[in-house]
Structures are given as C-alpha cells and as structure tokens.
View 1 (cartoon, rainbow, N blue to C red):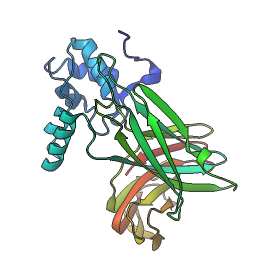
View 2: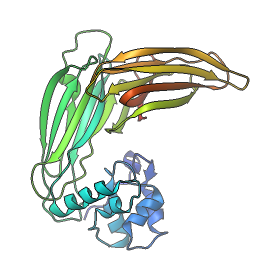
View 3: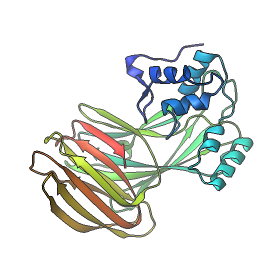
Length: 320
C-alpha cells in the first residue's frame, strides 16, 4: 500500500480547518485507537465539507491498522443536524443511493488576467475494495443579471478527477472584469458507495492560485469586520441572490476606531434573481481600527470574501 503523501506540497490533510498530517497523527495518539471519529473531532478535521475523509481514513489506517466502515456516524453524532436530515442520511447510507441532491454555488471571475477553475473528484480511500458509484454533475451558469447562459453536465467516474476551466464556456470580449455564478447539483448515477465528491474551485492568476470548496446556503443578514491590513489590498464581497425573485440588499459601512464610529456610506442595490454583485469594500485613511460592513436582505444571499491587489495578480477567497 502506498503511503499518504506528507510532503510540503500537501502540507494540510484538512484544508478547511488547516489541519496538518502531523496534527492529525497527534490526535490519533491521544484518543482510543478504535475510534476514528474521536480523532477527527480532536483534530477539528472533516468538520465542514468532509472532502478530506479519504486521506484521513488512510492516515488512520496506517497509524492503527484499523479499517473504517461506519461512515454515517459522523452525521449521526452531530447534534447541529436536524433529526429529519439524520433519518435521510441513514436511509441514504443503507440504500447506497443519493436521496437528496447536493448543491454548491461557485463565484466565477473572468478577465484577461484571471481564470476560474472547477475541480470535480470522485475518490475513495485506497484501503477499501468496494464498487463506487459514478457521479453526475449538472451545472447552470448565470451572468450578473441572473440570466442562465449555459448548462453543461459532467459524468465523473470512480477514482476520476476532472479539472474544468469555466472561462472556456464564456464569450469574454472586454478588457475589464466580469462575474458569473455557477449553480451545481451532484447526484450518484447508480447504487453503491460514493466517493469524496465535494467540488472545489480556484482562481488562477499571475501570482497565485486561491482554492476553496463550493458551498450552498447563505444569509439574509451579514456583518463583517475587516482590519485595515495592507493598504495595497483590495477587498470585495461576491454576493449571489439564491432565490427565484428579485431583491434589494441594504448596505451600511462603518469605520470604527478607538475614539469614534464614522459612517462611510450606505445604500441599496438591486439584485436580480440568480444575479450577482461584486461589492467593493472601501478602506479608511486611518492608522488604527477596522471597517465594518453590514448587509441585509429579505432573501437568502450567498457571499464570498475576495481579497486581491488592484490588478488581480494575487487573489484570496473565503466563505462568509
């Protein structure tokens, strides 16, 4: 059996929580060697998207020699999951076929200097000798005004990884920057176990490759405090209207320092159904304090924080 790659290139075994291989091995040494889930909890690994489970399981097996079988236990133990969803997860686990469609929202940025790439994987732990179902991905691409301009599908076979450049599906003619949203749905194509299929994406620019997993859901009220940091940084909130009706989102920006609170600006912006907005966050010309952004809407908005330089040569992205 090949050992898990623990080189500097793959420093983290769980990228969501920034858990290294050494962190997880230390957690294994401090829990019952028969309890894989306690090791995950101890290291704070696989608590979000769970795309790292195959590598976690491989590492646990190498350290203890114990196989992992009861995958549904992670969801059963989580008290934050509603009871009806636990029942669905159990039925799904027993039947081997996906009952509900899993979704993800990808913020797409297109320009002459930046590409948005989608990574679709269907991998399983190397220690398992089982049949794995292929996964079908259905993708709807919406422009900023909420008009669906493309629909494309992918069939990901077991142990297959697809890398897709979304820019190739867009007729980009301008010199500036355009934003789109990719709504994805994934579902097993037949009975059997499913691999780790959480889609990931990354922005490929001149000097960086910012990666993140896709996520659904959202908020109707978002409050975000941002330290001033490097004055050369530019900050945006990528906002997507997940609903089937138009809405206005109200925004207020405050500049907070030790002595007082200054209102920088406020306003209201129309956001079409399935539309999106790249909202710039202004900075304060002060030495201390932070900018606080408050956004409210009557419908659920999915938001991402994007940080870059003025030319988008360096890019960072995170969920909100």
